[in-house]
Every structure is written in C-alpha cells, then in structure tokens.
Amino acid sequence: MKNRIKTLLLALLIISCSKPGKLETQHVLGTIGERAMVVSAHPLASKVGSEILKKGGNAVDAAVAVQFALAVVYPNAGNIGGGGFLVYRSKDGAVDALDFREMAPQLANRDMYLDSAGNVINNLSLRGHLASGVPGSVDGMVEAHKKYGTLPWSELIQPAINLAEKGHIITEMEAKGLNNVQKSLLENCTVPPTNFSKEWVKGDTIYHKDLAKTLERIRDNERAGFYEGETAELIIEEMKRGNGIITQEDLNKYHSVWRTPISGMYRGYKLITMPPPSSGGVALIQLLESVEPFDLSSMSHNKATYVHLLTEAERRVYADRAEYLGDPDYYNVPVKGLLNPEYNRERMESFNPEKATPSDSIGHGQPMLEHNETTHFSIVDEQGNAVSLTTTLNGSYGCRVIVGHAGFLLNNEMDDFSVKPGVPNMFGLVGGKANEIAPGKRMLSSMTPTIVEKDGQLKLVVGTPGGSTIITSVFQTVLNVIDFDMTMQEAVDAKRVHSQWLPDVIMYEKDALTEETSKKLEEMGHKLLDKGNIGRVDAVKVLENKKLEGGADPRGDDFASGY
Ligand code: GLY
Image (cartoon, rainbow, N blue to C red; front, side, top):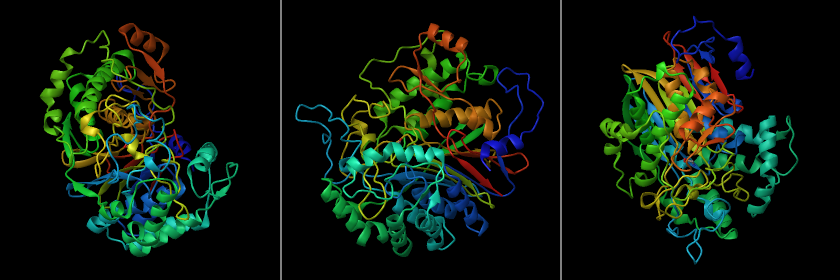
C-alpha cells in the first residue's frame, strides 16, 4: 500500500504543544518497522532491500542490492553508470564513508567545455558522451561489500537481474518521466534504445534485457564485470561512436576511496556525514552551527523570521562553498576552518533579523526546475547498523546516452565541475579554482548522506536528491526533528525552502509560505521564486521504544519497507 495511505492509517494523536515552533496538529507517523527499515525512491527497490535484511544480510548487503535494483527500476537516477557516497555507522558506533564519485577522464582538461573565444558551449557538459565522468558505482558497491558485506555478492545482484529480465510495471510518474526523455535519448544514444521507445502509460511493463546481461557479468566477475571484458569493451565502443573520451585506461584507473566521515555537534546531537568531494557534509554542519545560537523552536515553522534566518545562513555558507570546496585529493579544502563553530558564528555577526543582505552580484543563471536527479536511500538493519547512501547520474537520466548493447545510462557529472569560474552549472552553483576540471579529479558534489546520533545511540539516517537543494533539504529535515519535534514522516512531508547565495532568491515549494510570510520576506528585501518540489528525502528515525520509523517522501513514488 502506498506510504501516504499507510501514514494516515498510522496517525497517532499526541497532545498539542503550546510552544509556537511545535506542530499544533496530530503527530503523523510514517511506516513503522519493529526491527529493520529500508526507505528508497522505489517500492520494488525498498522491497529488494528488506528481503535481503530478512535473509540475514546486514545494512551494507541491503544497500548493495538496493543500488543495483534502483539501476533497473529507477533509471533516471538509480545507476551503474554514475557514482555516489555512502556513510556507514555500525551497531557499535564505528563510522566510515565511501566515496565512489565519478572521476574526470584522463583526456579531460580545464577548458574542455569552452569555445575558442572562452565562452561556455551550451549543453556540452550536460548532454552526450563528453558530459560523462568515469563511473564509480560498481567499484563502490564491490568495495562496500568486501569491507562490510556478509551475504554472497551474487545473491545481492540477482534481484536486480530478475527485475531487469522479467520486467516491472511502471507508475504514472515513471511513465511521464520515460515519455519526457524519449526525444533526448534518441538524439544522444548511438544505438537506439528500443526498450525505452514507446508512448508509456501507467501499468505498462518495461524490460531491460541488455542491462540484465551486464548485471550478470557484474554478478559473475564483480569489478571486472564492468571495468574489464565485454562491458568495458561496450563502453569504449560507445565512446568511439559518440566522440567521447573515456578510455580503457580510465576504467582501469577508477577506484573508489574510503574516507573518514566528518562530524559536528548540534544541540547535543552528533552529525556524521560525507567529507569532500561532497560539499554537502561541510555545508550542513556549517549551517547547523550558524543557526545553533538562535532559539528556532520559539519561531514558527516556515514563517518569515525562520525562513529569513535560514536564508541568511545559507547565503554565507554557499558563498564559502563556491570558493573553498573541491576534490581534497587535488585541492586543499580548509575543512577544519570551515567547521569551526566560532568561524560560523562570526560569519553570522552581520546577520540583521530585519533585513536581507544582498548577495554579491557575480554571474548567475536560472537553476533547473526539474530536480529528480540523484536518489537517496536509508537503511537500518536488525543489529542497528545503518547505511545512508546517495547515488547519482547528476541530471535526470544522466547525459542521455545508454551504452549500446549494455543497457545502462551514463552520467553527466562533468557539469558538477566549475566549467568556467563564476559561470553557474545547471543548479545555478558557481565555483572557481577549487573545483576546476583536471584529469582524474572528482567533481564537487552536494550529496549529503548523513547519520545522526545522540548520546552514542543511532537517531536518524537521512539524505535526499535535489542538486544544490540537497544540503538545505537535509538541513531542514534535521531541524524539523530536533527543533520542531516532528515525526520522521512529518519532517519529510514538511514544505521546504531553499537559498544558495547565488542566484539571490529564496526558492520555495507551493504552500511553504503563506501570503503574509511572503509579503514580510519581500519587505525584508528577499526575492522569492516558486521552485515546484524541493528534494525527495528518504529517512529513518529510531523511536524512543527502539522501533524504526521510515519517512518516505510523498513527492515521489518513494516507499518505506520495514518489518
Ligand atoms: N550531481 C549532484 C551532486 O552530486 O551534487
């Protein structure tokens, strides 16, 4: 049954809170799991994950299975042709982070998306073969499984193979997505993707026969099933046909990296999150440190005082992001300085509670209104191990190239580099030296897979897609739980706002701001922009009674599968 309906059935009446910041309505719970929980963007992927857990697999086993299942049932962001980040916390509190972000090919160079006059060539970093970084997802899953997995590798891939081979029935949202992307796939693929090409309606079945064969090679040969042999040959042939630059050497050289997660404290809660090349973890902790001195719970949720404060913190933090964040293997990111609570407090000294501070006016673009790219899932297993994993092709359906006869989409992650200083990428984000293109470098990301603990106990597993809005969606979800005492489902459902320094606007979801709030914000000097949906948060909360509450985002087909 759809989560939304379940949510209503599970509604619990709790005494209304009198503080203005607290919800004055019923507390609505999401899906409850007695022992384990998987929340992802697709019901079939969530079910694959919970089946693995029921078989005795741990959270990492389930994460591997969900990653591959999403590559089949959620091709707009689930992937084997992209990359991602995984944050792990064991039942004993040990933490780890896996960076399987894509890398720039060896033939990439700083100015590869500029014409001879130094102008950015429209769409070159977004569509077609040149837009793709070297994929990291398969290597990442192999590494995660080697270090923490318990079930045999083949058992984790088989459910995805079955879905690809036997097909699956699509929802209305999926049909719309497939219909919208048809033309672009035909323009960019060198081998027409016959299994994608039809007018789709809800209830149709889609099959992925080529992908099933690729997944079988990965099942049988692990890393070599993708980076060597037939799959690698198909990738290289695809690159040759489409004038791409990824070579066999790039595939050989690709390796994911285990990194130490970064952490920070907020009102006694410990945040464990992704270090660079994610900007998300650093920015999330900076944001929390910036607002900690303020009594948020005495402010009304999404009213002018609150939205103004968040916007002003976001303006400052995103300005830092543009200047300082990039691949730490290539650029000395001043993480310690940025995470210093004193530093963030000082940055907020210029905060005026009555008035917006105009952002500096370096070039900015119009961020995309579509934002289902990237996908996140959160898992807690029976032992209490947790995985927070965000994975991406960057834009929806990546660079729109399906590797001929291999059945999977390539990413368009090269657009996450700063293609020219000060020129915004598709999320309107600007950058400079720290995030310029170099061979083998990883492009800066906003993905923010995060785990929260309190007094050494697991509390929250959270993350979302949404490009530049990822950071602020995770930020607001954490505030919703900690400062506004929302259930997981309420925290996920709550309307979101977003601001990122440039462009100098507050983006908002429909109904996030009342007319009165909008008017007040405009009087303070803010510009407002209706952004449609912001984010698709999938998260798990550990309740006081140790049961798990899955919050699946109603903005998509997202689904919590617990038991
Ligand atoms: N491709 C979106 C991100 O990594 O931020």
